[in-house]
Length: 477
Ligand code: DUC
Ligand code: ZN
Ligand code: ZN
Image (cartoon, rainbow, N blue to C red):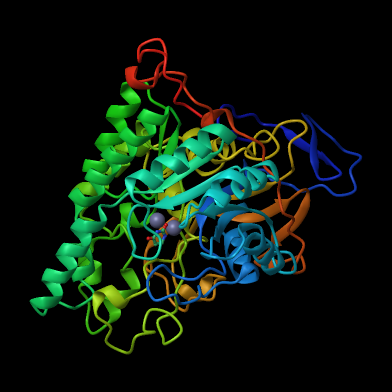
């Protein structure tokens, strides 16, 4: 049995869905699962995925609903998902969230929660709706610095950060410089450079670095922690590292596509490259090494899939036609099922990280940052019995046929992996066993989350925000 901190050769006793005891030779159980020779780990927590949500480009619906999305997650060792509830401008935020609840409740096979996406931070939203939803167990939201339909300007970002500080919520930030991307896109299109591979050129590495720097400074002015999501490259990563070294509460997330895919994957025949278009885009092998460094030295606390699944047909990647120009392609790659096996195989298996860091990155830190710990993210007395039993020696060649999503392809086709979850429990119920799903649709439950320590302000004010040094002006929320 392994957690982020410890390992022990022991039995795990489960009563009423929770871990009741850790010890030896618990014999009088209704059911005994023999995990000899296996690793018993906390179930993964997927902190970033898009399920039954429209794409930010083209507005197409994701290929996975809450049934196929959570089914795919659990076969890969994940027992909780946090997907997004995306604000629809003009519609009350609570109504939007209710709609996502209605989608998830009858379908999810594991527990789930929602982060809010705020694209229209009106006074009503910031003053009333968001604080109410935070109090209702959704203490995290995402904002975008790019995409025409989602982008907030710096002033709006400050208002959102100020609200987060007031309510104790965690803000996730998609950091890319919108105008750099737009300018590059326009120049590429007018030069006739329209193929999917030019998506990677338009979303320049320095556009991510610049916006990451700016997001950190905005959060510093407001004295509120932030989490930079889907970090792809050295420039952005070093901004985060520098901020952390100076003592700021800045968190970082990265994803499999920044370890295993490159921009060359976008350079395939016809529209095939569209399968690999995500934002930020995959970079190059040198950046893979950099991202591994950030995973092993603790710059990244969270490893997520950013599962944003679109089929390679008219419902998804090819919604604009069989040969879309790069800005017409829905952004995102699938990965919810392979997130843990890829990191286990290449990280733990190849000695880049130890098993405790693996658990921290994929489960415990996610639980801590988003207010799920200690109920989830660990195996401890009183925690939910969300458990993945891993065979560390099981070897597989990835092919989409093995997976349980509704996407029709995987960007990781043909990769060899060693280590696979062979049995998965959610609140003590066996969900996956012998390659079969053992529960019905709707067996997952919404998890109400609490405020996390990670999201609470540092209390370190820049001079201009500090009444002791700004002639007594009271500016903070
Ligand atoms: N941002 C995400 O978080 N996911 C998919 C695409 C995007 O831009
Ligand atoms: Zn994003
Ligand atoms: Zn995403």
